[in-house]
Amino acid sequence: MKLSRIEDVEHECSRSGQFRRFGPEGDDRMRTTQSRRLAGSLGALVLLLTVGCATVSPDVERARGAYNEAASDPELASRAAVELYEAQKSLAQAENAWNLLRDESEAQHRSYLTERKIEIARTAAERKLAEAEIARLTEVRRDFLMDARTREADRARTEAQRRAEEAQARAREAREAQLSAEEALREAEAAREKARKLEAELAEVGARATDRGYVLTLGDVLFDLDKADLKPGALRNLYRLVTFMNLYPDRGVLIEGHTDSLGEDSYNVDLSERRAISMQSFLFENGIARDRVNSKGYGEAFPVASNETQSGRQQNRRVEVLILNPGESPESLSAAPH
Amino acid sequence: MRFATFMVFAAAIGCSSLAPPNEQIANAEMAIRKVDDSQGSRYAALDLLKAREKLDKAKLAMQEKEYTDARRLAEQAMVDALLAEEKARTAQSKETAREMARTVESLRREAERFEGQQGLPAR
Image (cartoon, rainbow over all chains, first blue to last red; front, side, top):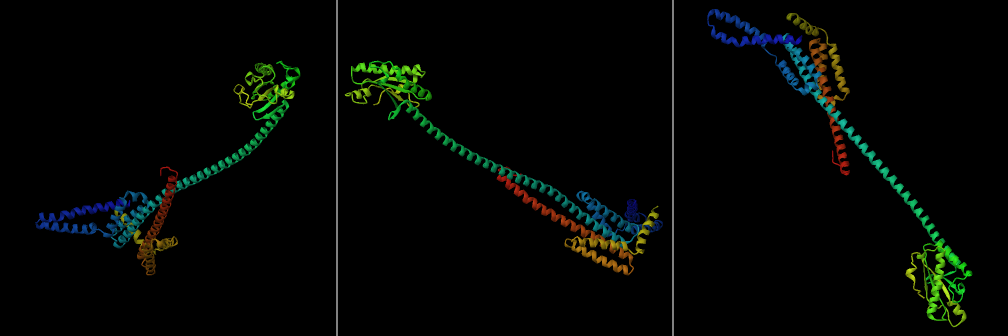
């Protein structure tokens, strides 16, 4: 309503402007008295219209210029639409005060209000820009803080996990150390027990420790004179040997036959061999594996006592059973190292 | 038609000069007090001073029964106070935005340092 009124006034003004522009040319063309009179009245009309309508208020013009500049800034127009609308209303009042009322003071006053309102709009636009920036930075800050919290949590979790693993490892090590100590104790105990048992069993068999190992010496009581057959009464000792060999399946034996110096040397070797083989056969018959036993006859070559006396010769007539350590092969140890 | 509009408008302004502008003066006083309360004088001291001076003059004009002058001065005091308020709010918002930018920048540096330690590419 108000706007249409302003447009009406401006329309009037532009028409009067045309009058004013054509005025002087009309003066030049019409030089008759009549036309002079007509020109005079026309001139009066032009003057009236020019003063009444075409003069402008510098205050209102400045306010309108300021408003148009602000309104043509799309950034400002969108951020401070309400403030700008207030300025627009104020400008319309300034224009009405001038165009309709010719109230210069009021127009000046309204123009002042308009310019201040435009300044308010500009400032508000700046504020809204800053507020948008604050909102954006708040988001960014929240993201960073969240990231930082996540990082902190991750770090704490990793640290806790590492500590737990360390503790577990320490506990495991301690347990293993304890177990291995116990195991070592048990093993040492078992080894001692085994050694005690072996010695007891060897003693049971009748073996004695020598620098070659355990040696079981069977006297001539096993055999009749010049015979290689085992006497039934000797078998008890040999069964013990079988039992021992069954208990220690990783040990082999070396059977060595010896005689005294009476008789032919070759005969004695033969006899000692036969006696050793006789014992070997006994072991085989009682289930001892063949690769665990070897036999050899040495005849009179390795006496253990003097052959001059009866008791000495009796000691020399013997069969020695060398009990091998685990892993030693009877085949490789056939030479009697007396 | 145009004449009628003119008359209405003239009457509106004409009447306003006849009655004492108590409402405009009260509004200006309220606006100035509002800026005072919100520490606006720190950011828009000159505009606030102008507003106060105009309000004082408006009150003087009221005593002289110069109601038109009083109204205009009160209205100008009001708009000056509103501008002072807007300037103060804007200055505070800008300060907050700068503060936020500094905070975010330090957080960003911290994050980059962390990612550097981790051997990850910085964002």
